[in-house]
Length: 195
Image (tube, rainbow, N blue to C red):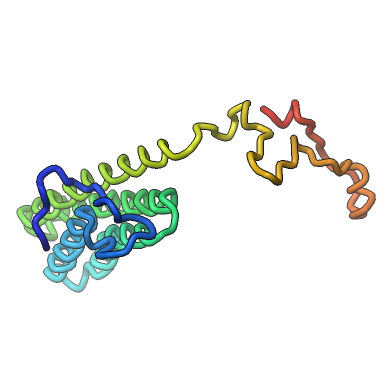
C-alpha cells in the first residue's frame, strides 16, 4: 500500500471516480482501509471454534461487503449511484460493529484482538463518512435544488418533451371506456395532486 499524502483523507484524487481510468477504487484510502479490516476480520474469525461457524459467516460477509460496495459504487456511471453503494457500505460497517461487540461481550476472542479490529472499523467509518460528504457536496453543486414537493417544480419537466401539468390530455373517462375496466376510483386534478 502506498503512503498517503498528508490531508488526502478519503478524497478521490482528481481524475478518479465514476468512469475514470487508472487504479480506480484501489486508490481510495477508504477502500484500502476497509480491505485491511476485512482481511483482519477474516484472519481473526479463523480462531473461533466450529460451533461459531454461523457467526464467522455473518461477520465475514458483513466485513467483506464494505470494500466490495465501495468498489462497486466506484464503478458506477453516476455519482448518485456511487453514493447509494457507499451508504450500503456504511450499513455493512454498522453490522460489522455489532458482530465485533457480540464477540467481545461473549468472550469468543481476546478483547485485545476485538479492540484492534474495532479501532480499524472506526477509522474506516470516518473515511467513509468523509467520502460520502465530499461526494454529496459535489452532487449538490452540480444539480438544481428542486425536490419532490417543491411547488415550482411540481409540473415542470425541463426538456424538449415537456408534457405540461398532470393529468395528461387524455380524459380519464375516455380511457375508462377504451380499456373496459370501468371508472377510476379517484381522479386528481392539478390542485389535489400538488399536496
